[in-house]
Image (cartoon, rainbow, N blue to C red; front, side, top):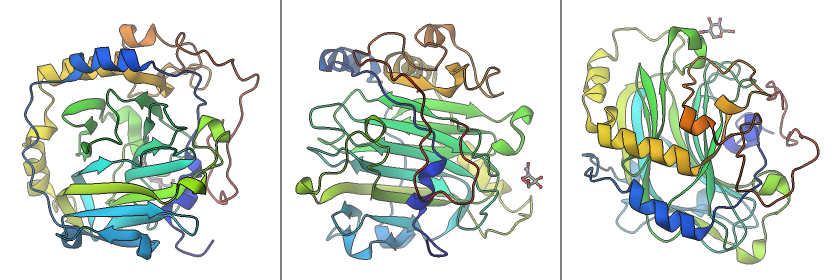
Length: 355
Ligand SMILES: *[C@@H]1O[C@H](CO)[C@@H](O)[C@H](O)[C@H]1NC(C)=O
């Protein structure tokens, strides 16, 4: 690995709970009705690719749309690819409409995330949305995760399916990070909220981050814990992005940010529609988490006998999970007899998730 590996080479910090279930298409259909909220689309102003981003790696596979308002990133047998925001942000709203590659995508990962791992190697912050490829006909799964100040030994993964097929249409995926909270959105549905608390300490991201979007070969863990590899017969795998949104306080990644520097921008961010969860959105979030979340570290009491401080234990959610944080029902696959650690070869310096 060179000094500036593509960010995917340190994705090893992710804990990989194996999946044991598949959600029937019928239930996806039924519950999609419950999730459509009447809330209007966010009031955001998209920017062009060149206004806010630049290729990160696999440049030839980063293809701008003719109008410049979108970009496609490709994985072929030679390389994955990715882009990065040109600036770093101290708090922000990071959002894009994304259409995922269709057909057979086992082993392919499409990641949309914020990080400062290139600047703060040992104390990096990171907020993840990661789509995990699948064998043909299976619903896409994805995970969210949070790291703060190098908390790579304390993964905070949640995994979900979706109430729609993300390869058919564009949907908006967003990460909001303010001084007080983090919200992950799928369209206008908040799917996860983390409210900052003193107990979280440095585990709540605190330093400027860039936005990254990447597509890469994660054959060794992405699909059923690595059972299904990328099959390049189906290449290139193409993830399409448009309506890119970057809002927040641009900041230089110095160690001590002047505390006053982002106050005005922070206040603007807090006043935006996506920074407040309405009561109907909150209901949609609860329904989403009851129907589509199939792993949560908060309910994985084998891993965290005491749930991390930000965990809000919701009885209607908890009832669905075993003490492994995985679903009680819905899995026809037999249980794996032992729990395995996933440490891709790229792992070199950081602590591993403990399992
Ligand atoms: C982050 O970690 C460093 C090194 O362990 C420590 O010195 C610093 O106080 C931590 N920062 C926060 C905000 O916890």
